[in-house]
Length: 292
Image (cartoon, rainbow, N blue to C red; front, side, top):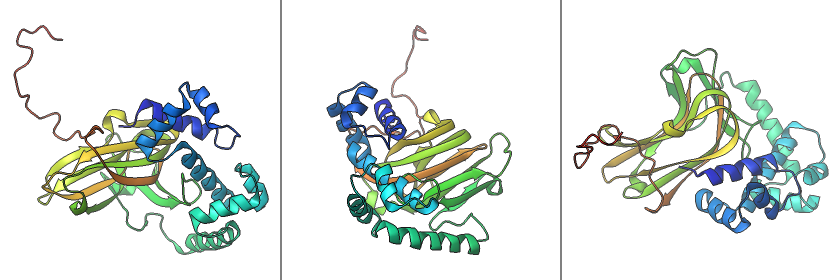
């Protein structure tokens, strides 16, 4: 589970991405030392605060290149780069092409996609499911994203009855993860959601559920900016498949981006909730009826 301090760091960074703040300013705003903030943020997200800010500013610059006619020089300064040359180097390092070429190529590509696609429910590698998939839609969104140039977008198509849900998801083999503790992390943004969260499930070859977490005990509600979330599960020896995605219960809109999987050690607590309600205690408890 992500910690309260990392949540607060992400919130503060997002609110001040295009300011001239230094690390000391963020630390003062949050109320902790910059050394503590840096250590905790790196521990949970695998990024330094500086790397996070840089990637997010470059993502904003990619949006401005696609959806405005600002000059590259104006975008450079808007995104807090010292010069157009410095911005171009950083952009090329992340996007593998200079900003001018990116603007021309991606605008043409997205225009072609919009003209040719009959449905938004087609995203390579992903599929839409749930209690009634027709009540939901998904797409790759190139207007709202956290890093890179697109995010995954899941929405309800209209009013949704209580208990209905939709999910955009993937499945892959557990073979490379067997015997490891795995952390799935991502960034999620929401708009008017009833209930939302990332989820991950690990099954045996017979389809038995072994490990599971759908963030039910820390679900997202309402409208939220990009925030960091994580799920930690043990990939047991009998594991065969790993399933994961974005879950939307009821109505609303949600975006997911920056999904990653990494091995963590046992000092990182598991978030598994599978079987937690049905497991028998090892010993009898409250025999004197004194505990409430």
